[in-house]
Length: 195
Image (cartoon, rainbow, N blue to C red; front, side, top):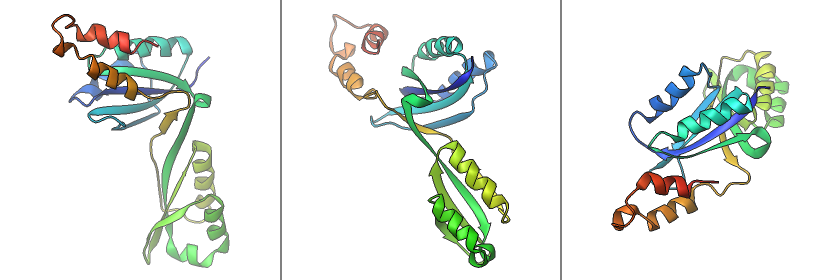
């Protein structure tokens, strides 16, 4: 049975890496629902957060393929109950409506939205939350003349993970380039990142 999975990919920030990852998805005809890239807590290591709907078996094979990419350190696969995640959305509303219709102001407060730009012709509000919360506010604001809407991709933190920080520190400590005895970086990489 297909369900929503979040893949967290830790990798070096190399030109063409995103293309290599996307090719793995396109070859298998897997649609990416959401994709976010950002620096991680470790210098020069980036974190890719990828959301897809697939079966557990397909995900397992996908993770193996992504981890074969040389620039990739580790891929974590999590379902929604194993992560803490949020999205951000921006809503552009006519300022005249905000000023005149009391329900809109209450609605925005109820959803925790805050104004980020206020102009004579429009006001932009920001809200963070999960997909359902963002969509519920969108549905309500549409009734009052919503001008524009945009939602970010998912950002997520794994509940049970310590990330890769400790593993990278160990890898640096055991850097194979410093020791002529063991110069197989890929072998070291696979040992460090085994779960």
